[in-house]
Length: 500
Image (cartoon, rainbow, N blue to C red; front, side, top):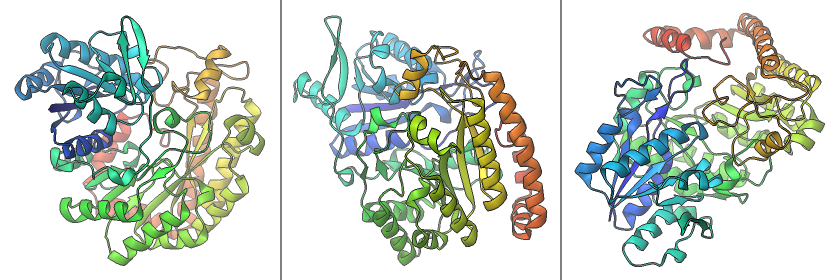
């Protein structure tokens, strides 16, 4: 069958931010699998075609351009990725447009919001199926159904409407991730993504102070055994930690580095280091093979899964920085409310080891949780400042975001804490959509603003006191003078939490 996978255009709800245009990881993985099953696959990434249209909040290809691609390719099945709740209306608008110009095409939608709330998509008659959870095997089985090889009841991981009622087929997570081929990079032009990175729309927009690289993001594992109330990964990927073997991961890296000239990799796993034996073997193989590429962990890893022996090997592999997720500076709050199951003393130990080894370290913190008090918030802010002062950890202070499908969303809704339930509002970068008896969104902005004033002053002091930090920052500008203009443009355009 002919299958077209589409990343829809984006709704830029924050007029001061830029849409990130990293490679479509999920679609490339799905494409690799269904291509292996013998289907003809095409990927259309709307974000590579920033058409000018009257709607200034629209970023990406116009619906007309997408329609032209559909009419030329004439797919049997059209798969649409909807990663974020804020983009739901844009995805729905696209499905309805496609159905109006190409009524015979079967439309399938997938992603975290679709998994958590399939009924919100299936209210539209333009959508035939919603994929629940992982998409590789499910989309292949949908193709078998349309090919007459499977009954609809035998297709795992789908939601659909039958006689006006929502039907949910059972879902099963993929246990052998190595059975999935490497992402189908041959179906996209990676050079176009490298150009986007150089134009300031790389996959990680908070990395504006580094020269754009031939960068890609990869995911080497799925699932998480922890129960953090803010995380939306469980409905899509489950609680069981599943992972590619070290051999698969290093083979994937080798393909990217040697065939596509990739020189920087963002490991976007939720739990890259959870299985420490596996992660250490990956590092050993990278060192043994002499693979030359820079890397980081922008999606964060757990501080309690970074032993000193592992960190010493991390240091040997051209790591640019590590990011850990701490969330709160109050141990009791971290245990009982956030449910992070993280020992703060272990965080301090890891921070100390990174400082000794001169591994740049970043940390995520969150304020504005339901049931959080101003005292709790101040404790987190003071802890973040202390960690920066003592261990040079660059802090990223974020507002709690009640994503659909998370326990935090349910808590906020049950207690009347949601400022709005419109997914396209109140979910803007740098804003809070929670208001409680203890704080308002405006209170959080004040905490945030005052914190970064302290951080800015501390950072300047550290540069003066530590010649290596100063040299590293000077080096960025001396080696890449052309980057100065790009940095200025991006920094002025974006509402950056770090550089307000």
